[in-house]
Image 1 (cartoon, protein in one colour):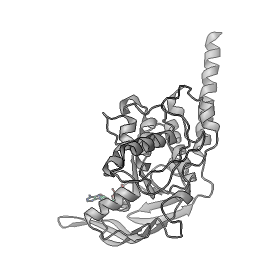
Image 2 (tube, protein in one colour):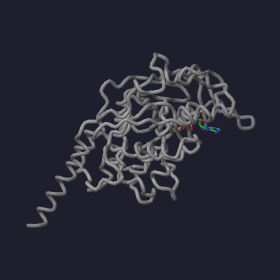
Image 3 (cartoon, protein in one colour):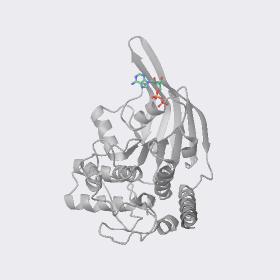
Length: 327
Ligand code: ADP
């Protein structure tokens, strides 16, 4: 069996908590409890079917989150404008974006190249400031904060997942996940406990001491997701999270994100692929720095179901092939 096919969402529910901050990549304030149940020491590897068909257990309980659950949007941007100035040239990357994202939403931001998606994500991730307009994050006006204040908000409210995983190559999965908590000054014992818990949550309980080069692309991205969540972000920003992955592994990662969202995590994901956006609950399209489409997706496809079908089909085809070769 390929370990790449492990999915989160089975096993006993565990209670754990994460707090703290990171340098650039994560944290926030959502409470999680582990959905997968494998420890580092587990010798019994679950079968594909086991891990793929057991329903998701609660991984994040909104009632436990540090954030007060109100109707305050997590993201509230009003007439957000960004103009890059190069010499005498003004490049209007965002021309007035107004958008609200509430707790528990899973939003796919789409649009052609140059439509302003990255610029928007940079602003939402507090990596840059708008030229005009307001950005309220979890009820706080952040668009006019200083760099230090922005870094603080970034470290405490937002988890980042990138196309290229951005893991430290010489560090184990566990060390990668623990790192954001080191910056937050969390005790060693708690870091270890939370790090292990988050890796179990994303189905990597048996891969904690592996380095990125010893992990598949999907597993590396799951480490990155665990790292992004370890400090309990109010918002997970995912920038083309499946961009470097094959279609089966993309389904695996989308299943992880859907499982997390099912438990209350708010996700904003940039993707240029409709095939990925269909798993989100809401689809927003950008063009020329403007929102040109914003629709709920009332019945998103289930990445886990599709992944299961694909794996079963591949297994059946393999069986037929082996049988034919035997005759
Ligand atoms: P997308 O992510 O949808 O491809 P971007 O946000 O990267 O779009 O780009 C929107 C527009 O802003 C494009 O015209 C791009 O060339 C321009 N742009 C993006 N970043 C910069 C920058 N740092 N300096 C100048 N122009 C930029």
